[in-house]
Length: 569
Image 1: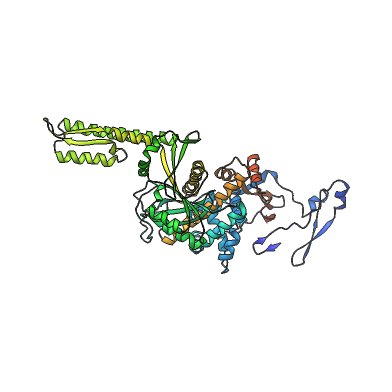
Image 2: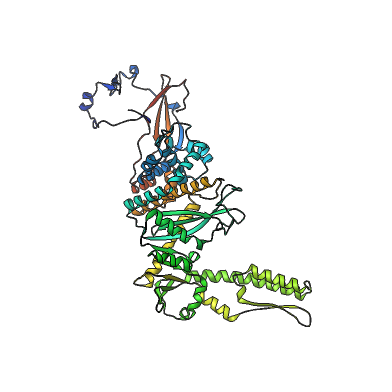
């Protein structure tokens, strides 16, 4: 069949398997008609005696059979199927394919998102390296040379205005596919840095870098997911924006996009302030949040009591009711966290004591005699070790031999630090049956942390090479789409109790290739068959768990003279 996308095959009927006499009954010439009504005689089966003179029977030179055009197929096919399951093909066709472009913009958007899922790279890398090595031009399909960096940049500009509609569409599809609910929202922030000056991007600022790149300008990404990790919304802030100052803006944005609702917000202590909690309560919302470490000082007596409830081998919790208050506090203590904090403290104690002993020795040996310089060095040591500086009394005192450094540990401060290690405090206005239930709900924050890890590792959202603000925003939007595909794959595998992670599934399916088998004939022709490599047992298992069936072929047989250019368009 000739279609607008090129020649395609359509199965009319299945004639069954022929045996014995049935073969003879079908041994006849049939008429093949095209759409113009023209007929061509063709033998359904060629008799061996007729084979040498039959133009419909090819005799192949086995020693010249070759394979060409090997390209990645399995992971791209999976990415496209996830794209379709989320209804993004129809969504973008409805919103982008309205101006009769040479290449439908919905297909270019699919290329960007599938690349972010399978092998993240820049737009130039997509054009020059990744896209030519894949079978996407057959799967989408698109003509050769239509994907270039300019077209990819233009597509980024077209995607950005659809951000709100994309979020709303994904929320609906996640609900339809996985019965996902968005009444409990997990909120957290991270940063991602950029390369270059980015002078035309007002978002790029120097601030607290979670990527340990304070030398680079950055932006802050605020992400909201539900308790299963399905993305709900995201926003971008200036790179020097304080976490605590973003909550009010996020609350207004969520209400504008998704309406007012009685939502439960969960976030860690870095986002907590009294003003933010008041803003949630004003909207009729509820919260379950961490608290600053300094808040533990109010519950020192409770920490010393041995009445914790052990809910896991290494986790103990205690619910604390505040008389006359609407809130509940949950005091938590974790053995693993205690060991970690103890090791960190021990490392810093060793460092500060080594620095103090060195300064003390230099003063005692007379190598440092200026009192002001002594105090300056002492202040520098305190500033370099803020984690444990309050554990020590440090002073430069006069003696008969001259100024001396005197320092020692504060026993009471050391005791309090040991007591609070491994402990943290949660705060909520939720009503729950037990402290264990609230603790488990708070631990769902690991889902948003996992989302950030995916964005920064598998989806390679950093670093940012775009210089224009709108391009940076569109880059983050494509990463958001890539994460939507990734989390869909994760839950499809989980639904079928698969032992494979999304990364493992993509890696194994990437080893399924599309190849062109070239069969030279003795008549001087070449028969090109485009086929897909047969999945091994492990790959077939993954496909079965995802309920996917690979196509048998990608296009009809192509026959050409050997003297012609053998490259397929």
